[in-house]
Image (cartoon, rainbow, N blue to C red; front, top):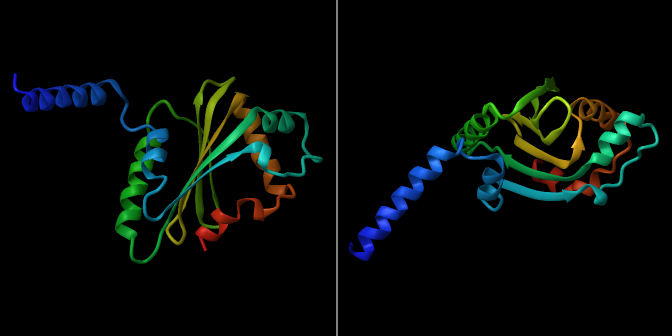
Length: 180
């Protein structure tokens, strides 16, 4: 077999194997593929770098907070000139999150923005929690919450506590300014 034909043959076999064995593109792969793409911003945030007032947390909220190790953030900024790209990327993310491995945790609207929280794992322990929000005016954002022994129920209570906690926005200033 000629080297060029052999290369094409092996490439085809690898492509078929990858698409048949996988469950489509993973969220992690989507992050890697888009971290430096136009209209995207990506940031990996170790939780140890985030200064947060935890004095009003109850035991479950504190336990949930301490189980989180880092946050992976990926955002897409929507503008009048990139709505086709926005809609395409939004469809890709929704397709990934519709995979059966993502369990629904909570879904709500906040000031016209749709927020969906899902997790990978079981009722007792989440391997990963995903927070996805989108707004046609701003774009969309995905946060992968990664840690150890994360309880889905406790993560929900942590979310409500974070809304009311004292948090300095300058810690994620690059992200905030990106969407302005």
